[in-house]
Image 1 (cartoon, rainbow over the protein chains, first blue to last red):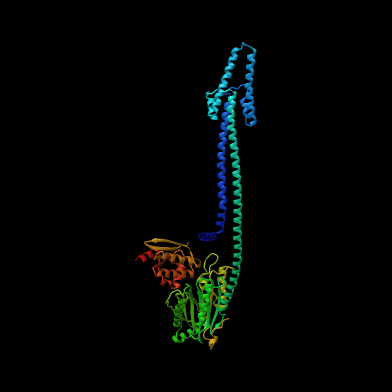
Image 2 (tube, chains in turn yellow, red; image 1 turned 120 degrees about the vertical axis):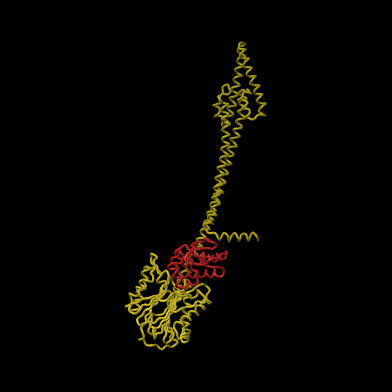
Length: 508
Length: 112
């Protein structure tokens, strides 16, 4: 049970780390192992070198012995040294040593049979043979107790006198030592190569399996990513389509350019991405009153657009309420402010997502040209008197809707004259940035609005749109939703329309 | 991180160190203050001197922060100039927030 838990915990841990780390983790084992094998091989080589050095040391001592430290009848040990390397040579040395001793014996026999006169020389030879025999015996007795090294030392110190046979015996043991050393060196060499070979095979297997493992991981990751990419691009495509649909729906909510009673409306709107949080509308509240508003929901995208839909619906549904308020107060400003105060507290209760919006709300009495404007955080609208003589920014700001509870609103009230124009815009227009990050600004909008005063309202709107678009740069999407509503008051010449309730709002 | 924090006379002074304060920074910005309040910091200064552009989402975030801090402490804004100051004025937020000119003024205000 515990193992299962650990296993699943390990699995979840492993699935959380990214693919690069996984591959590194897989490849770190063979890397460390390669390093270990390298270090091991170096250490083995080192110990092998030591034993080789020892072997050479023994060879050197033998060379010293051979190098005329002793006299041997007719043997050249220096020459023999090279024959000793093989067992055959070793046997030859033996043979020739005995041959030398035999020759001494032959010489002695000849002398003994030749003459009695050479008694002195005979004595010496006998002495020599006697010495050698005793040395031989001495050596034989010592061989059991002394190591070859000790024998060599003794020989060098001349505490032992050897004859040829004894030296040969010495060589015998030394060669045996050398042979044993060589044998063990070859064995360890063999062992070393065997170990190295085994380590290399293991290493190869580990590297190969690690690479296969890593490859599997990478492939699986690639496959997963490819699948993910496919499903993402599919859902992205779907989302794009849905966003386009949402945009179409939102645009369909926008009113057609129209003249309501004697107020002419024109507008332009462009979202920063597929859907935006800007919305506007205008409609008749009753026979004599026309209402308009422009809204900019904070943020962009779907959430902002959904809030824009909500606000649009709310405003539409409030028409009757506003008509009642107008009848009740008989005053444009009071109607507009009390409506917004109520709407703000209702909106605050409804939403807790922190979304809010700025709004500019206006109600016009078409009979008198009286206009009440309430500015709920929306940029100050521009009022241009007929003929473009005078242009001014209206209002001093106000609380946005949905940000502060118990917010109260103030209205700006004025009387429009025939030909007066009002421009209501979202901050997307004035904050529109060009490639150098400098903003379009209110001043440019003001002068453009003034320059276009003698042109028809739709041309004025078109000019503003094109200028803002050019400012942004051709083909560049806006950095914020851009909307602008322009109206012109055509005086009291227009006939008063008798309204049926159903005709209040006719969406396109 | 676009926010720097230091403590002056027991007051946490948080300054925004970038020119643009827009929707992209809102989530991190709000979380920073939620964490600060959770860590027991109740007297806070937000210095907006470096900010040259602030959008509506950013304004919403500052209001959200005021609501986060408001119940348990005090928040004073400082350094708002140009477009930022205009935005606060246009939306009447200059009446909702305590706004002073400099960080020193803000600290003094919180310590008075």
